[in-house]
Length: 99
Image (cartoon, rainbow, N blue to C red; front, side):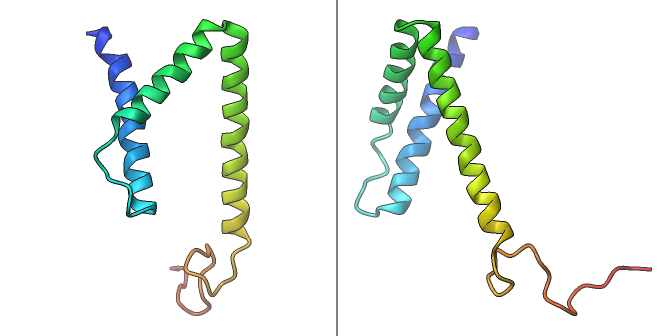
C-alpha cells in the first residue's frame, strides 16, 4: 500500500497548480494537470540525483520562501485599514463582550 503514496503526492501539485492558474488566467484550460505533476517529479528526481546536500539546500530555500510569504501575509493583514474587509479589527459599536 505504501507504493501509492508517491503518485498521490505528485498528483496534488498538478491539480492545485492547474486550477490556480485557471482561476487567475481564464484563458488557461483546467484540464492539463499532468505537466505540473511531471515538473514536480523532475524537481524531486533532480534533487535526489544531485545528492543530499542539494536536496537539503532546496528544502531550506523553499522553507525560507514559505516563511517570507507568511510574513508578508501577516504584515498585510495586520496593517490593513479598518475600512477594508480583511481587517482583523472590529468596527466600533458592533461587538460587546458578555458579562
